Image 1: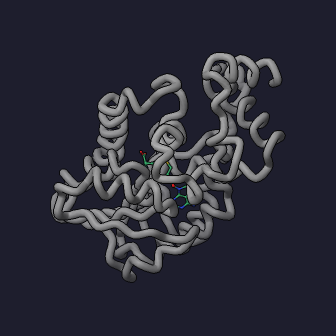
Image 2: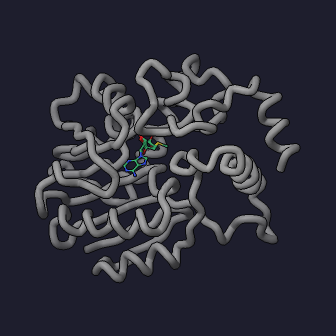
Length: 247
Ligand SMILES: C[S@@+](CC[C@H](N)C(=O)[O-])C[C@H]1O[C@@H](n2cnc3c(N)ncnc32)[C@H](O)[C@@H]1O
């Protein structure tokens, strides 16, 4: 693990402040544009992702398109984008839905997303606290889409969010999330990127336990299905790391 950490530090110039501190989401400063993008996409776009903004925008739009398709979003739908980040996916959803309610716990991300979606008149933004969707009315949402957010939540968080989601969803409404699959870690069919990520995050956690909220939380589909079922959600289908439920 130490070898992996030092090779990551060497490769990226040692700039690990964003994951080594508590600034992962809530305390992230809006001026820390690089930190925001690294938290969003890791180092897939190199150590200076701000120079690859258009590529990142497209990458997130392509990822969002998969969610939009799998959730079957229709033109009149009200979609809650939970953990909207920079708003790249939000903008893609807004092109297919009637209205998008974008929520995030991070003021910095919300401000970015607001300007990203400034030209769209069917998106509204809300700053929320963890597990608390109180700005969203009861039974007002057709579909909840949450991309690359539940990968950062533990099973208690997931339970508490599903409880809130149950309140805001219309009967028959859908929830589509992605998650980090603990059952594929170090498996016989190796996924080396995932294994390396696990080891790197274990190191970040060792060096600063307070960074946990910004690290990947490993869960199982079975565990998530269990808590969702407990709250009255029906599992509809799985595609890779994406799970679709219906109320
Ligand atoms: C990796 S980014 C993904 C952003 C966007 N959904 C995307 O796919 O491009 C994770 C986002 O989730 C937000 N987030 C993290 N923990 C959260 C929580 N407990 N509740 C709501 N949002 C959260 C972060 O502030 C950040 O905007």
